[in-house]
Image 1 (cartoon, rainbow, N blue to C red):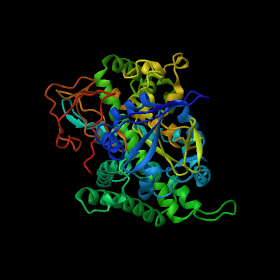
Image 2: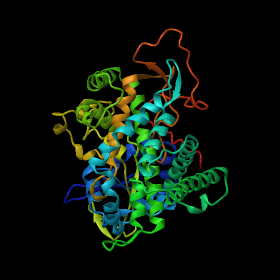
Image 3: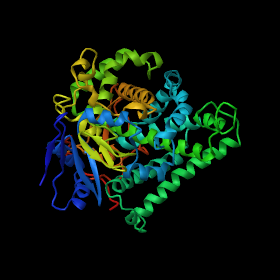
Image 4: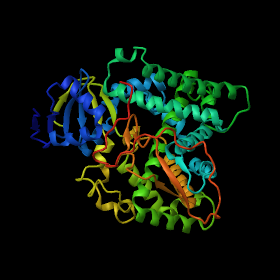
Length: 491
């Protein structure tokens, strides 16, 4: 039975998620129907106790409480089962490091993500977006999820290493990430380490994928050390390994950890968002029409936007922002308390696992009217003042807000404008694949049909493409509030 107790001073409700056998049932609910389970929690309180395996944990369901937690990084540090697993994968890079090391690490990397550097990267973003869709043909079915992963991997690898990874390495990164995001999700919701030391096929796939990503990064570092210095993020990191009297040099391991962190996060999340963008556009023709009108007007016959075009792509950016609200790639995160603390009128012990979900906050009708509808107009100038935008946290908040938020928004806006200038993408006949939560949320094998926006001569034959979809999964109807197939096969 669920128990909800009001906190008298602030009116916060603290409750417990129902479940006959809470030591197992909440993990199963998160595994089988994660979004359904999340949507059920606000009915039990603003802070709700759940169980992840044998461990107690607390889900924060109110945006004000989430912001309090994210801004108090001394008390609510990055930790819990999610970051315990991520540290095994990424080490102690800027994404996963503890509070004490974060400021120094962010200061080291921040110059490479300042707005002027983002402008410098606009050309490569547009070029890579063109490259992804250049060989598409009218009537061809492409795996949009794979295409967007190819795009984001190429962009982030050039930012990190100057030269793009070759086609074989890009495919290796993409395949490794697919195994990693499946494995990370189940390791987060069932934090029982012994289960994942068993040499099952799924566990072996996960370990091979992790080893593959580390080997790719090590090879890139070794190649650079034998070559000329470059003005990229790897160059910044290698320079920081040499003492200059102003600050302590970083270690070789720190170089590796930062690169792994940025390669993984810079590839997976924006690719999931872009795949969701094209899926949603196909379901909302009026939104697509307005997007095309703006893109055609801004580009004025050019193939891709330049740095000066970003401020003019107002509706295009609104489409990306609304996708981040409607289908946020980062949908579930954990923190851990560094000391005993009172939170929402409830006493949390030191070492407590606290969770929050951007998906849950973004679909709260109290913050976003018509929360389940895809409405980019809510982000246009003059509209945002009426919304409770403290609930929009696709890049987190506070001092641990994503270091690449400006870069990522520019990257996705440029890619959307470049591809939408050439193509409409249409869903295959039948129900549409739902977004599938794993370590990230989004369509993982989205097959769509290319429809050119310019006339193609009759008789032009479709060409085979490496982006043709792999073995098609049985599609399912898209329902943003009730979607929840975890897509995880690592149990």
